[in-house]
Length: 169
Image 1: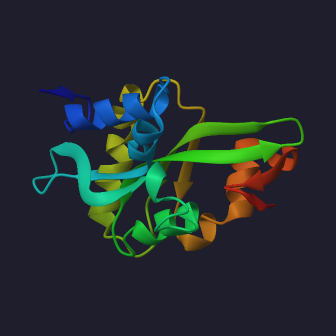
Image 2: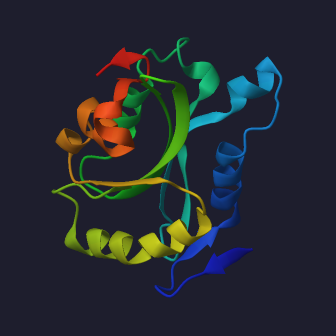
Image 3: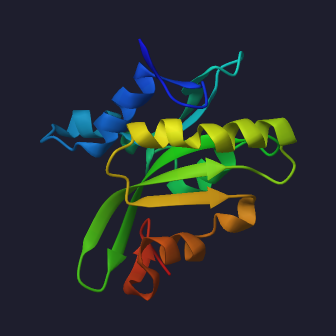
């Protein structure tokens, strides 16, 4: 079952489940924590009528430090050069006072994406955002230059951020 929004594009239930699982951090065993998603990319289905999870486009918490050394760089590398996507990223950052983890919602609309794709993704953004209640950070990126640590740190808290994903800003 899916939920329909004004643009006519639906959001698959699996997308909503993944968001809920990333948002709600239950007390978990170390094995369960390793299976938690660090990042997930969503796309439109082939018929452009439903927002779905893009096959194979995720990073698990257990992959970080094991097969992936820089999760944010890996995340950026998973985005297509010439098409749009939505994404959730569980950002880890530090302020002078504390360490935090917060979900970020991304609309990826690269310069070289087809105009029709940009229009569909932009007009369907509200459909997915309505399903992602409680997201504090929303970010639109139009190219890799928009996805650098400094611009993300600025979005998360500006000069209060001293480190992002374990690296100093």
